[in-house]
Length: 323
Image (cartoon, rainbow, N blue to C red; front, top):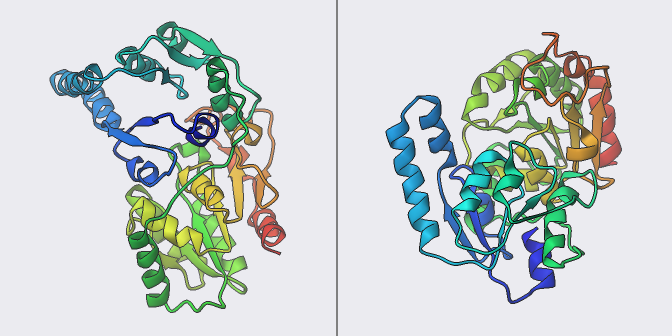
């Protein structure tokens, strides 16, 4: 979206409000002129813990930041109640969001726009129509700084991986339990791929137990980097891979932005909306009557839409995108 703005209006100044966790992924984006980091994560944690005084203090800090500035327009592509409240604090005459946004979000907007299509990027880019912009730029952008590239180079070298070896990265964790493919299936996938690929596990600290389980069950050498890298360091490793296998989760889109081929495993979310586009990005889905429910807890208790997907089906797609 930032790229589309700059393509249409080269002289505009793009300010991006972002949470603490993902801030580094925006930091080096050439289309973003300024970043405002505000901890939505800590704000929501305080609310969940009924720590209203601390939450209010964080909110007041955001009000102080936004209240001192004036903007031509505020664009809300998240479409949530909270983001609507945040946009309402921006000093501007134009608050633009998506017409089909959830959680009463459109009530906070001065105007809304319809999505350009079903895919999430088309939904986001639709907001630009209200500015008279027809988006021609749709490439995702992720810039890896030199220090993260060097970390990745050192990591791969220290692991004994030679330039001739192909790396397959497995990302076992997501933010929803229903989007997680079982670790024993990731382990079997590692086993099947090991004859042609060096296997690296990637993920955040919350996925450390998953990584250990996969290591124990794989029966083949696995390099486990889970919980040992920053997001940008992980991106550096992903950029060196031949393929990334993941569910519907952040590193999947990091890989797509870096043009590393991907195999995405989908169940509760719809790949027609969320899967990275392009021939180098494959999807594996085993459609059930309840598929694409978009629920964080499986209503049947089986998570069958994910657990019924076989490692063999995933591995076949790996060879399809790598060949």
